[in-house]
Length: 346
Image 1 (tube, rainbow, N blue to C red):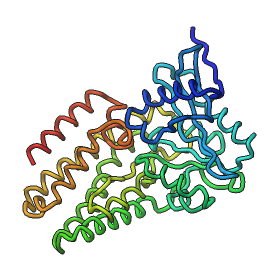
Image 2 (cartoon, rainbow, N blue to C red; image 1 turned 180 degrees about the horizontal axis):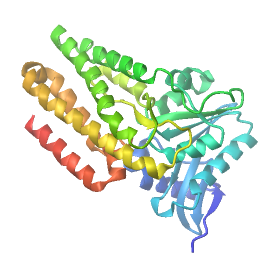
Image 3 (cartoon, rainbow, N blue to C red; image 1 turned 180 degrees about the vertical axis):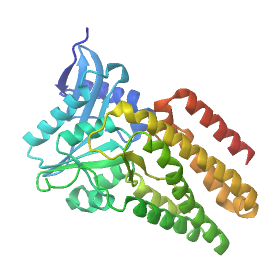
């Protein structure tokens, strides 16, 4: 029987072995953002068998970040994630870092539970970027690009805040979709008709996803809408600079702060499948209703959004395809085949 230990990263070799586990867990795409030479953190292991880790980054004199937390699926069920978080928090406490950040995938309720129990709360996008030290703003901006992830904060000066911000989430998401629709249409200079239709399409797809997802998610129990956080800054940048759409939608999640992950996994996967297929159907419909606008650029924008859903690994692991795949490989295969067929047909 395996007995896993948690050990500080104290040599370059240990750092590289831990990094290799992170790439195995998150996919090769994560190597772009992973630290090249991890020096501070912990790894979980059974002798020389490395199975997980956490990387810590001091982003200002008083702020630290648990930048990556990961456990090999084959080693799950031994509380390694919780033990790694506890080791990271204790290390930052000992270093005097009173404000602590971490990224958590928005559908990973098991990680929610661990961070909520350790005093972390999920903050708003603006707060995550501008509510803390200016010295660490650039670092936090980089992490805010991680689509489908949220910034959680442990801040002893704000102990009375709710675990999840819940006010006006649907309105915020729809308002953001209108802004993105106007930005990608206006700054790409494709004409007023494209501007009107493009804006309506982005906002309409966002609203349709909510309508389709709610009854599926609601079967798991009380839910609330979780406005997108990670990826929103990247979406604004891509729309303004390139006239394209980097999709950040949000989703329905459990109402409770603490949730049994296995119960929600099924409904999260089914919800993602329904919203993914709704986008595919909208694309087909628009190609028939507005063929000139579709071939003037709208079609390419929508095709790219569908392709992003098909790719299941980082940095796309917060989108529909990855969420479906985590639930069912069969359901993912069906959705991926249908999506690719539609892309080639269009």
